[in-house]
Image 1 (cartoon, helix red, strand yellow):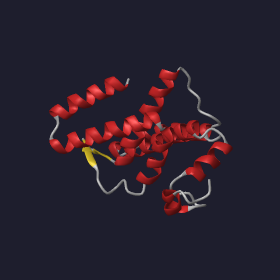
Image 2 (cartoon, one colour):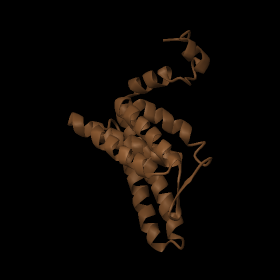
Image 3 (cartoon, one colour):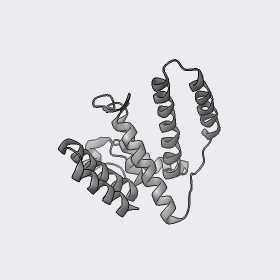
Length: 171
């Protein structure tokens, strides 16, 4: 799978303008990092949400943000890794049922929307939330893993980024 993604990126770099070629290379690097360390993808997703409106790409009548690209890369990496390892483990998902129900109601409301493109964009945002939830809960499977991830985060509330970077904080 990594070879296929690398090949597709190489073809994209050869045909796309320079700015989009750089974006394709950065996207490939992010994808490869997320395959090896999915928790880093979850961290990147946390920090991309507040800054997603800084730069948008136009895809027809829809805007594509950095967060959407990150979610796509993260889900693709998580799915590819699960396929190659031969197991899908999602952990405990207490909110999956309500989120799926809400998504179904949103899907039904799409049939009555006056602005189809805007409504579809909002539906995609909720799909991103659902995918991020499933990937996050599969990476952080239990409360013990959540505590460990929270304490090992560079921006942990317990130690802060400076102590984390200097390795003087709690372990």
